[in-house]
Image (cartoon, rainbow, N blue to C red; front, side):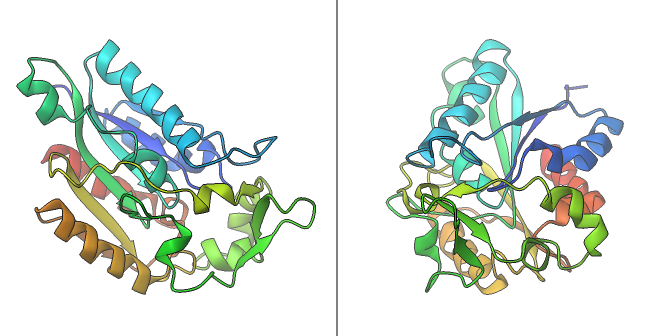
Length: 253
C-alpha cells in the first residue's frame, strides 16, 4: 500500500499554527503525517514588506519535505494562507517532478475559505472596496487589525470558544494585503484543487469566495472539488471534522 501524503497546513493572517491543533489531532488518528508552517508576517517587527516573505517560508518547508525527503504533499491553506501557500508551489508539482524522474511533490491543494489571488493582483484587490471590518492599528499604521475578531471569524461559535484564539491575535502588516502575487499553484493545471466554501463567512464573504472560485477554476482548465458548509470563516475550530473529511477525500483521490 502506498504511504499517505504529508498534510502541510498553512494558517491565515493574525493567527498562529495553534489554530490547526484539532485538525492535526484528527489527521494523526487517521495515520496522516502532518506539518505546519509558522508564517512570519503576523506580529513581525519591523513589519514585513510583502506577503512574499511568507511565501518564502512555505517554500522552504516544501523543499524540505519534497526535495530532501521525497514526500508527496497535500497543501492545506486557510484564508490569507492561500497567498502564502499557492505562491510557493511552482516547480514542486508531483506531475512535473515525476516527469523528470524525481520523487515526491505537491499532489493537491485544499483551500479553506481562502483567498485565490491571480498573478499580478493583491489580496485587497479582490474586494470591491475595503472590507469594513479591517481597521488600522492605532499603535502603528503599518499594521491592521479587525474591529471584532469574534463576529468576523468565529460567528458560529460562543465567544468563550473563540476567546483563546482571539487573545493570541497579532497585528498583521498591511503590506501583505497590498503586495502583488507572482505565482499560483492552479494556473498550469498540474495540482488538483479543492475548496471548502464557508457559507457564514464574514471575513472572506461568500460572494467573494464564489467570484474567486469561478475565475480560478476557469484559469486552471480543470474542475475543482467544491464543498459547501454552513460555517463561519474559522471552520477549523467549529467543524474540524468537516475540514478533515475534505482533506482526506482530496488526499485519497
